[in-house]
Length: 260
Picture 1 (cartoon, rainbow, N blue to C red):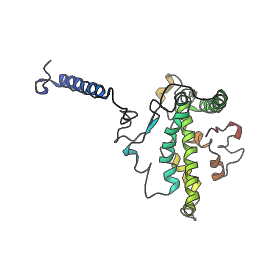
Picture 2: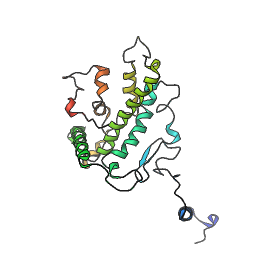
Picture 3: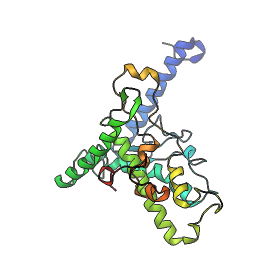
Picture 4: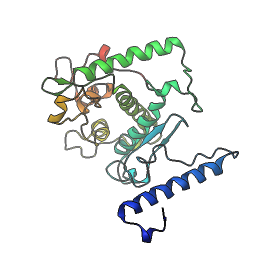
């Protein structure tokens, strides 16, 4: 085929451009042979380009990507207080890091080799905690009569819980160094304490786990738990809002997931 684009129709032009792109990638990859490894690729080339608002973890190189597009409000705002930034962007970073220790990430070692490096007893305790999250997701009703499949989404749900835990720990460490930042935004308004802002910031991506009516005819969906379920795993959530046994948001301590 004549690969001069001026002589091609639209379909042929698309084919030619695709073929040229593949040739370029092959030449670039071949040029790497025999040279030191350079980690300059995106974890997910289609999902973590600098212009994409997303994040990803790559177990084969034990690294995470946080694209530049993510570093803007509402996920990050240099003018916002610590609670907002640590528990919005911080929870996302923690989420991706936690993927290295979730049900799949723990099967890769520090340099990305497929190797289960956990002690059997640690794996047993991990699975016991993960089963709680699976049961919680299974109980979530996506649509009337349609429940989520907790086993399929356990990795994402574990990363959500782990990300929040890491963000909260990082925030507490920051406030120990900068105690003056632990203040109310407006003392005349309820819900203005640091813990309240922290809770709202973690869920500012919105409630996930939303399904369409068309999902009724599909297998049980692998959805991430919505905000209500993610909140129930946080010990500080109960403290911030005074949640007690008998309240709709109450989850018994034995059923809460505690991993990190």
